[in-house]
Image 1 (cartoon, helix red, strand yellow):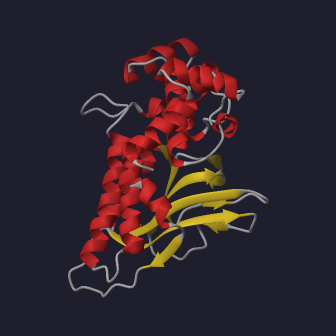
Image 2 (cartoon, helix red, strand yellow; image 1 turned 180 degrees about the vertical axis):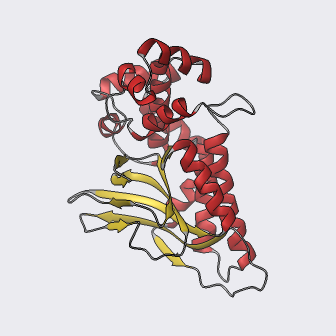
Length: 290
């Protein structure tokens, strides 16, 4: 479905729906697929009114920035931003940069409840499986493309978006029926928000506020994998998404996923996935007909 949204092209739609005497508690307000290029683009989470709502925005190409209550995030391809408003945050495009993304704006007490649970568990920036991104893209495409959309259809698409987010955040990285411990969840959120940078075990232990040895034991017990292996797998997953969803060069993907150069990326990718990055792109697109 992501490929269908990309083929559809850039569009923004603000929904004007009739009010009902029986409210729906997860409702889409607007949706869009946009590109921002070398322009002034900034949103302040305390300057958008007092009525509560939430923004879900998935980066496809380029890079945005987010300051979330004083914590800085780089919003790179494959990352999804989840924000509830009003709140002390700001997201923007750096001068001279490009940012391409799709998004939905939702309201309703159920949408806001789920958003708060997601942010509390994983932070405002998450990295999701491709299947989840496809579901979110399908919901966005429904909202921007379906003519004469009814309130029920708009709510259904909104619920589909939130349900996909729920599965992406709470359906992975946990023992069945048991969420990650808060300190480990904080580290996972830090990894996903900083895949372009250095993610040494000592730094991750500091994020968890543990000694290195204790952190390695706790992380392995919670996730079933060593911290360094977890970081590499997260990077490989993002490489896969960028190869299939964009036309970025391997050099650019290396820079966006924390690899020193394209050769290092290619060796790591071949070791983990059994083929060269461009061969993976070609086979993946042939399989989906894109």
